[in-house]
Length: 435
Image 1 (cartoon, rainbow, N blue to C red):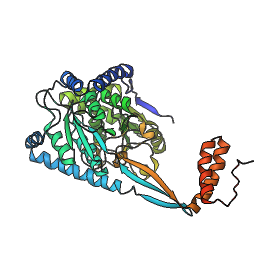
Image 2 (cartoon, rainbow, N blue to C red):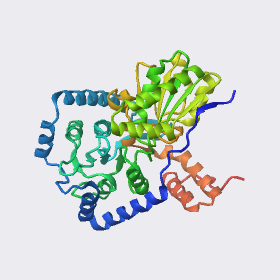
Image 3 (cartoon, helix red, strand yellow):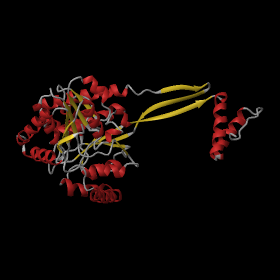
Image 4 (cartoon, helix red, strand yellow):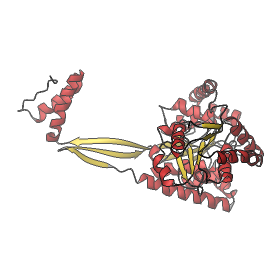
């Protein structure tokens, strides 16, 4: 049967891109022209903050003193998990040296970028976990300088737990500045910072647009939209857990899509019946977000069987994908498009968001069709090199000269010719294009 929508989204997760783009580009141009002064003016306007921009060691220590010991222990636990997983990821990238043909050696080398700028949201929620995810992976990758940037609160500054997390994870500088102005400061190298080679981390639509606009002069992890989550559940799934997991992700924002895909209509109806009470039980801000996200962006889809469920999931290419269904290995081998996969009810997206070790900076809005999430690899340039003996260069020079002339690129051909003439002066070579 065709997919049956018991609930269909009335809106899609798109902002007014043209208006946001104009605002962001104006701010970026002002800050690039005006430097530190302009950035501080925007900080005063948007962050309502006129305190110290780069935190001193004393300010970091004072912030750490405000963090309860239990919170510190949880942050250290999460940091350790993310660090060990990142180290294991890094071990999968090795320098390579290979003799392509006798006398011609080619290689691969992984080089970390020099300076990373890590954006840590601190507006609606204090994203402690984002500091852990972005700074830790940059440190493990080997970046020489890491700046953590987070919006300060008026007359308070950056949330102490964010400061503590960024510090223990390895940030060289912590900047009290949010939004476009924070992204611009890291990109342009303001306040004595090195210019960032890459910008990473989640943020609102203005942060996302700033990263999009700056991409090219600086690298970015990805162009992110609102977070999204999909659950695949069969008839034996626990409806209360499924509903709770959907609500837990809907609280991210008013435009954060959540989707349920199942082959059991009874489960779908049970989950839908439970959602309103679970949302009503949330605190005020969380409830407002979840209410709007569920009302306007959520979908519930009934499929004929698990193959149709898997195909539907791959079509959506969700940022977060949870499977609460039998035969988890089948799903692991079948599914191909997702940012991060959570197999079984014993784990949940919330684990990955906070402390499990896998990274929570992930592709949204269907980008999982072509990319994965943030990892040590995003901070590393995979470059190649080669060297050759004179004898080893001979067959490559011959092929290069002939292919170049066939393409009409005589200059390229002559770069090969001069080496053949120098290394093999007594030999006559056929350097004309193919018949």
